[in-house]
Amino acid sequence: MTDLSTSNPTLVQIALQERSYAISIGAGLLGQAQTYADVPAAATALIVTNTTVAPLYEAQLRQALVGRYKQVHTVTLPDGEAFKDWTTLNTIFDALLGQGADRKTVLFALGGGVVGDMTGFAAASYMRGVPFVQVPTTLLAQVDSSVGGKTAINHPLGKNMIGAFYQPRLVVCDLATLQTLPPRELSAGLAEVIKYGPIADMVFFDWIEANIDALMARDPAALAHAVQRSCEIKAEVVGQDERESGLRAVLNFGHTFGHAIEAGLGFGVWLHGEAVGCGMVMAAQLSERLGLVDSAFVARLTALIARAGLPTRAPVIDAQDNEGHYLAHMRLDKKAEGGDIKFVVIPSPGQAAVQGAPDAMVREVINACCAA
Ligand code: NAD
Ligand code: GLY
Image 1 (cartoon, rainbow, N blue to C red):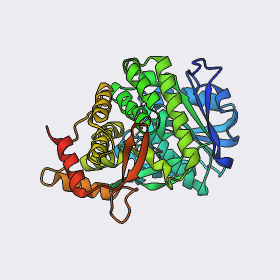
Image 2 (cartoon, rainbow, N blue to C red):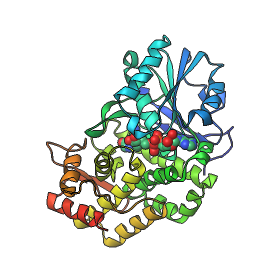
Image 3 (tube, protein in one colour):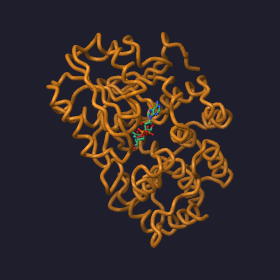
Image 4 (cartoon, helix red, strand yellow):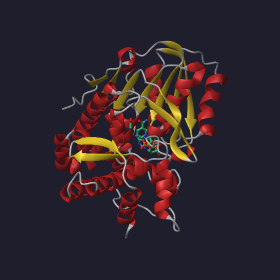
């Protein structure tokens, strides 16, 4: 189990040769100067955060950085998935250029996955690449988005369509920040925690089932274990397939349907984690129809997702042609090849694979999941 004291953070390593880095997990880490001791020194640091997170944690992070950087600037973005776009991204470049940031300037992403994905993309492209550190403050970001180097913004036609693979120098998971998360966001993060069970580790799935009430109650030890085990699984996958040439796609379990829900409803209507939770139910039902898993597994996964406070019924995204709209969005998924949609399915609990499915079968799943 994770040591909860600040002085002894738990470290999970991402092994990627010269791009290797640590995920540091513990309570109270983000305001400690020592946490950042191995991050490159530079004249300037830029904290990128948003209007919700800044009043909660920006001062703590700033205080930890002022001894190491001559200038610590902050850019505060509007909050929300709807702002994960070119216009908002450009405000990060405005801040960097306006403050004369050089190519050694270090960016610190302080916030959830939206801030992390945008800061990472800004770091990947400013002066062709500057160092950045992830300081994730949502459960979802601590267990998934801050780890592994996927950075992106949305396009109105598709989720995370414009971005880069670009690894941070350090990830700081301060478990204390999870205590201020709105309940809906805690549930959204639990979707990505649950994801790791069916795709990689059913012992972990058993543990989540046994501890879901403790997780929902934000028990610090339960959250610490969930973050650590999730990061270990993600580290193992990313270490084998950094740029998703194969294996890494399994981390997208539930995301093909989920991204269609997010884009179909308009970004920000359902939270990413909510869409992934419901998307996992849909992907599990597809796995059952493909003859891969039995109905007992689908029922078990669905029940856990519901206990995590997540929706298990899919939304109607178009009143006239709902299935057609789902399919159209899914054809834009990054896993699609030549318009053929690829799904992450569960051949047996604890293992995942990527494969296609007949449109008629996918339509049946959409119909079944959208039915009242
Ligand atoms: P988010 O970044 O929108 O954060 C959720 C909400 O919580 C926001 O309102 C935020 O301001 C607020 N918040 C953040 N920390 C808080 C705290 N400690 N206390 C109170 N409020 C806090 O959403 P998210 O769920 O963190 O991330 C979702 C995004 O992550 C999506 O854009 C998704 O595409 C992306 N994502 C990326 C990857 C990846 O590998 N890069 C993986 C999964 C998801
Ligand atoms: N969240 C999916 C991935 O990092 O690949």
